[in-house]
Every structure is written in C-alpha cells, then in structure tokens.
Image 1 (cartoon, helix red, strand yellow):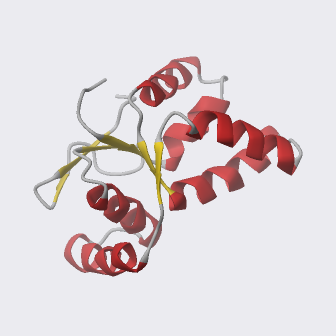
Image 2 (cartoon, rainbow, N blue to C red):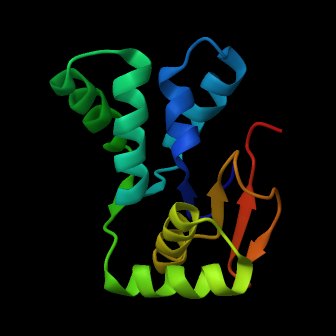
Length: 135
C-alpha cells in the first residue's frame, strides 16, 4: 500500500467482513496494517452495515468493530469538521457523509483516503488524494 498517513472510508472496512469477495477482503485487511485514521462517521456507517451484513447480535458487532478499529486512530467529528464539510460540499459538490469523511481525513493531516466510492486519484485541497485500493 503506502507509507503516507492514510484514512479509510466505510467500504474498505465493510470488505473486511465480506470474505465472499476474497481479493477485496485481502486488500482491505492490508489497510489496517497502515494504522489508518478512521472518522467516527465511518465507524457509525460501518456498524450499521456490519449489523445487517453479518446479522449478528449488537454486542458481537461492537466487539468485532473494536478489534478492527484498534489498528487505527479514531478522529471524532466536531464543529470544525462539520464547518469544513460544508465548505467541501460548496467547492467540490461532495455528498454530505463523504464530505464529513474527507474533512475528517484533512483535519487528521492524511495524504491518502482509501475509498471505492469516490473519484479515484482526485486531489482535495492540495493535500488529500483519494485512492481506490481495489483497482
């Protein structure tokens, strides 16, 4: 992968529990080795998807989440991130939750955001490059 400071989007975490797509599953697991920054927005989205996808009790989903997230750094969404999200939406026309994830990555001074859902190789604010790790 990379030696830069990275953030990951929800879809990357989802592939960690989706062993049915073995190539994406393996790539997603490798992102954890890079000690990624993970926004609380991503955590919330992941918990919602994981609860439905693996159809396990809430406590078990939280336990799995804690195990996986221990590999990275959690960044809390705050007023500054929300304010910056609004500016990113104005400037780049990102979707609301994507803007929050991107603003969180920028706030954490990440150089790369791994995401399958955003424009591959897009550079945001001359700082953050969006990379689809599954290409």
